[in-house]
Length: 505
Image (cartoon, rainbow, N blue to C red; front, side, top):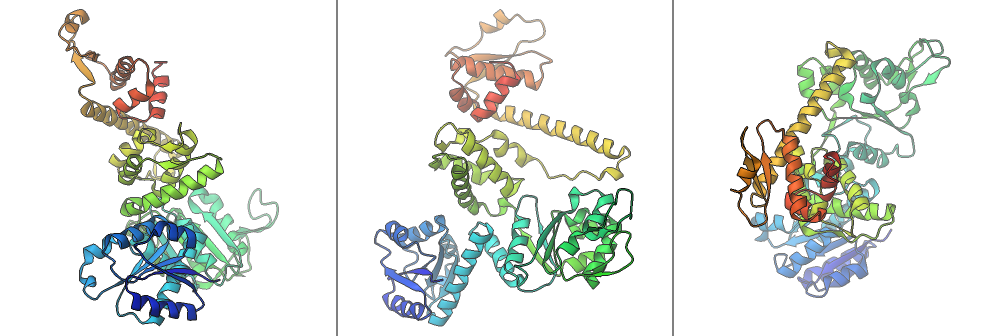
């Protein structure tokens, strides 16, 4: 498949030499001046790679690099020997890769081919990002896919661990065979062993017939064990035997079964800590951790958020048949600085909801829920103990989870109300009227200017104060909910929900 490469003529001698080398390597090329209308050139040529041959720090070259970055087009910047010392300026260029001149044409061709193949890998797998951490992940996928060694993928929930596992399979010699996924956390201990290894007829109550396990179904291909840190110690022993000998027994079986399976495991836990606590076998950990890929959380690659947002808006606008222009700059900036404890999955779900619910054809800052911007960022991730570790079993787990969620919700409400009062002190007056004071006496001391007061009485809950604050804003702006939401600093959807909850309709 021929690839289109654009080469700038800022360094004409270098451009001519590279153009000849790429043509000899069967690439389709075009040379152009970076001071021309680069946007029109890029749109017309639809390149897979842009090579900046010189003057990389000039405004027109930086504009071209930024355009390529936003369009998810790889760039190769050729630096002068002195440029390599300007580390900060080079990093601001956002080039996918840099090489220092003089550059051998064969080296440039090899680098270009690798960048193009990596971009195609991203398109194929859905792994989006231009940041250094994501590029490092892509390099590891390229290195690890051809072999059969076990891979351990570590990263927080929502970072895309299954996408990486599927990419490893799709690039491997096993790509024509089965790719079987098992969520170890979704299966109770009593069923996990049977699910993984299968069972014989009559092995236990309800086993009416022989059933093949996931390892047998994955024979010749790849099995992906998600949430590997959640499997019980009794199953860990049997999994270790499979990894070491590629053999196992079905539940209730007496004949060993031999398989040829590549194992890819993933976890959002710190398995090394689990080993130290005795919750995970050290020998299994070392056997799984032959090759390792770390997926960074979204907060460690904020520069990728605009790319992800644009990708998701295009996807969901098409899915839901909506004419959508995109997102206001202020709204995009708010998303870039948000904490994102749920990572890419949380961002994707948020964009879908905003594309569906946004009143116009563009997402505005007011459309973003306040809890996305603030509340989640103040909470530390926590993991509940397994039901068996609680004195009340499953019921105890549910009760603890309910208590924790209630406390979290209360904390979010308090922080949101405090922020609103801090941000908009001129909009409302909170007045402590005391236990026996008369409202008419207090109202005579209130400043004018049409400000609707919020009266605070001893014993009022935070919810009552919040209700009074929302009621005051609605009164001040004569029921205009959009204006009231802007003044309160919350999204319209959040305001609608609270109006309904407080019966202010």
